[in-house]
Every structure is written in C-alpha cells, then in structure tokens.
Image (cartoon, rainbow, N blue to C red; front, side):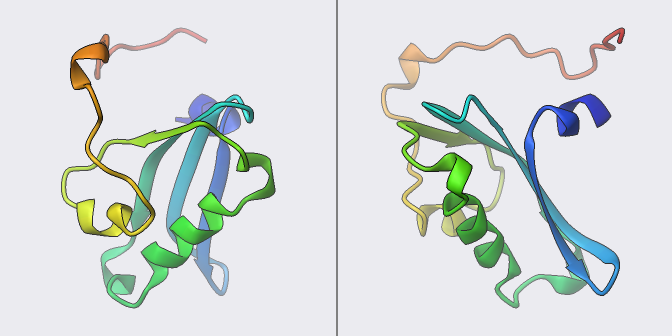
Length: 106
C-alpha cells in the first residue's frame, strides 16, 4: 500500500489531526485517471464529505483535461453518477489481469 500511495495523487480528509477519509488517483496527469481506495469512516458518512472529496479530486489542477476517468465501486454508484460517471461503455473492449493477493517484491 505504501508504494501505491507513493505513486498516486492522494487526498485525505481530516478532523483536527485525525484522518477520517482518503482517496487516491492513479494517473499519467495527461490522459487518464483511476480513482481508488476511497473511504470516509462510518461515523462521518452522510454529511457530504464524500461529495466534497470527489469535488476536490475532480477539480485538482493536476487532473484537468483528462480524457478518461475510471473507478470501480460496489455500492456508491449514486455518489459517482453525480460527477458524470456511468457504466463502462463497450465493456467488451476492457480486459484485466486480476491477482488480488499477489505479493510484490520491492
């Protein structure tokens, strides 16, 4: 996770000095951004912080002009649709290698 954070643009949400939310964007800063690892702690949900976090990400100066944004979500479709996210167009063109428990050396 440390390497993932080190190689992403990261966003934190804090109350005083306590972190209560997080998101990161994997990007080339020119054409593509993938939003990952988004969370707001349960005690701080439903007060608009997720929406504020997404607005902050979408408006970040280093992320302007991207041609494609993507993300994966299990249950926050309503949040992301407010920012223009839709189901993948032409999913038959997308492919993946999925190895969730692969241990990387480095």
